[in-house]
Image (cartoon, rainbow, N blue to C red; front, side):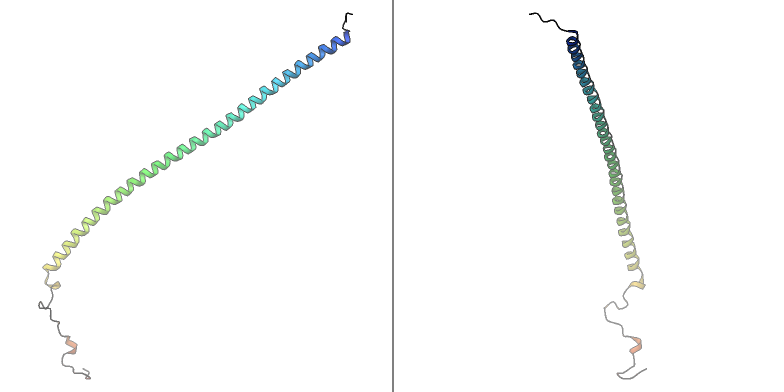
Length: 129
């Protein structure tokens, strides 16, 4: 027996194959759209990561510059400190030389005896002046 397809069977099989193709096409389109969306998301994530990386790099560079400035300032303060210490030593020596040259700063009794207190001279114990 030879089977001859009826027109309604052909339309059904043809319609089913068209429907099947359109489902494959829809699936492919959805996959393409999904992959494009994923690419956009990945691109957005990559962009965000790159932006964050650039921000961190800039922050590190700024901190390095700040550290360099502070190091230079510390060196300048150390130099100034040494200069001031040297000046203080010179001034201290100068003051010692002036004091030793002046009779005002010389001891009154070179032998180291204590001078009597003039307010107590002539007063005996128990007497008031």
